[in-house]
Every structure is written in C-alpha cells, then in structure tokens.
Amino acid sequence: MKITRRQLRRLIAEAAKTIIVDPEGVATPSDVAFASGRAKDQRIAGSHPKLGSLMRQGRADPGVGQVGAPYRKQGRELAGALGLEEPLTPAEETAVDSMGYYAEVQDSDEVEYLYDMDVIINLFKRGKAGRHVLKRFGAEYAEDIWPAGNYDAESRADLQHVANILGCEMHELGFIPMERDDRVPLFHQLAEFLHFSARRRMVQDMYGNNTMLLYNYNGVKFLYETVFGGFRTLYFCSK
Image (cartoon, rainbow, N blue to C red; front, side, top):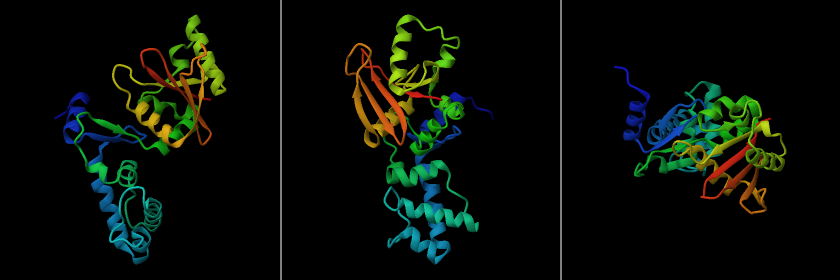
C-alpha cells in the first residue's frame, strides 16, 4: 500500500520525537539510529582484540557520546578497511557520538529534527555546489528570489549592507529564515551551534542599531540578524 509524504511524516512522528536528517534528506528516528549504530560499534569492538582495546579505552563497551568518539571513529575506519563491518550511517554517527543516550529520549511534545553540523558546514564551504542539499533544509538564495536583480529600494539597501559585512555581492547571498510556513529546524540548530562554537562580534544594521551578530566558524561567515517583531535570519555567502 502506498502512503503519502504527509502520512509518512505522521508515522515517523508517532515512532519518535527526535529525527536525524542526513545530507541526502533521509530522516531516521534518533532512537532507531542509536540502537543500530551502537550495535555496530559493539560488533566492531568484539571482532578483534586491538579494535576492542582502541574503541573501549579501558571501558567495558565502546561507550556513547562525545567522550571517546575519536577512538570509536578510528576503530570504525580500521574495521571498514578490513571489511569487518558495515560503516555507520551519518544518522547513526550523530546519534551515538553527538547525542549519546539523549537519542533514546522521546518525550518532547514536538518533533525535533537534527543535522550533523560538520556535514552542514562543509556544504556551506562548497558554495554553489552545496546549494541543492541546503535548499532541502530551508536555505534560500537571492538569485532565486530576485533572478533579475529586481530589488525594491528597501530590500536593496538592506541586502547591500548585509553583503558588505559578509564580503560578497548581493546576488551571492543566501539565507536561512527562522520560519517560513512553519519553523525551519536548520535555522534553530545552526544558530545554537554557532552560539557555542564560533567566534562572534556585534555589528550594526543599516540604521545603526546593534541587531546583528557576525559569526566566523573555521572561515565560514554567518550574519545573524534580528528585526522588529523578533524575526531572525541567518545570512551567508554562496560564492
């Protein structure tokens, strides 16, 4: 029996409240990804004494969460090179290495979508090559919205100011809104990630108000803007 996308989303929501979305747009409930990823790690650790020693690091099992993640990743790479185990999917790595046991917790009132930030940042670094993936997650581009450069005077002034801060042309701007028809999950997770992980400084909008934060994460710049009414946007360059 075929089901619609709306029905599929509803089924996923009923199965788990936290969904991990990989760069190809595949959605996996976090508790499912955690269980399968953890099982793979345990099989890898038990397949060879040296792999077990590396992945366990003195523990009874390979563990979960950020502590020990680099050793687990090394063990997975070695196991993959030896053909001992199927590699973990991006969703499984996010659940096991980043979320840990939180991946099993499904008590939120709303469905929460999670993205692997290392993968997402690399998409921004790829510029136009990363557009088709980022669009799936809610990113928009000035070239698409104003294909002929037909900005009204206020939009032109605002976008030019943003472009000047980021160091690119107006037609190269991309942005992620806080919400469109609904909440844009990538905006909220990326904004939180930048707040805790990136260098930042306050900058002024074109009216001289301190309503913007300029983030720099490993050379990738994002401009976080808050406008009247509390609506927020993350801008970036897509050269």
